[in-house]
Length: 222
Image 1 (tube, helix red, strand yellow):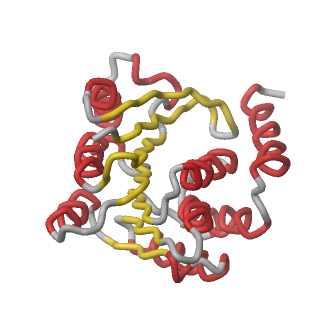
Image 2 (cartoon, rainbow, N blue to C red; image 1 turned 90 degrees about the horizontal axis):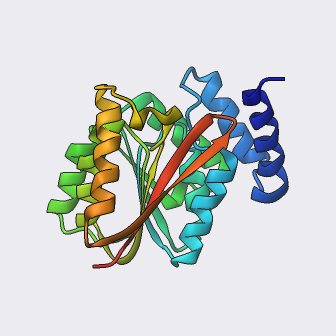
């Protein structure tokens, strides 16, 4: 048994036993793969962690950058409750269409709005429209634009909000000499999180069915 398979078995056990990944959530994973999209959604335990963070900060308005098949948005929509809302940004119209189908199956479609287009552009439109601040922002899209997404998140949140950035370790590449734009963007966003006086932040390495990775989480101080 390889370490990766061993991690995967543990991840599955924890997702079922502790995190509460049910048949609907599991079916969203399966439908995403069947549709030919990459299986790069968050793990079951990370989805539960996002939902837990939502509840801990009392989030009713959530912004997600990167929709894919709608798996993480389903966790978030369940967490904000019937009176809450999730706005999620997706570049690929095909992914957005699949996500909407999945949300209908999950019974949370009325809480979620997906906006199709380049996230950097959509974020500027949200900022320009003076939209009500979000209580939690989850950044999980193209990594080269992470710094842009963080700057926008700061403009769209309030003191007490949380900002979560996914995939900040990705096999340890952040400490390599790579000039890959995604690696550069990830390093830069971590530097921004650690140096911005408006934030209290940390990063945590994770190991799961997706291998060696991690996320960063920041509390907006003001």
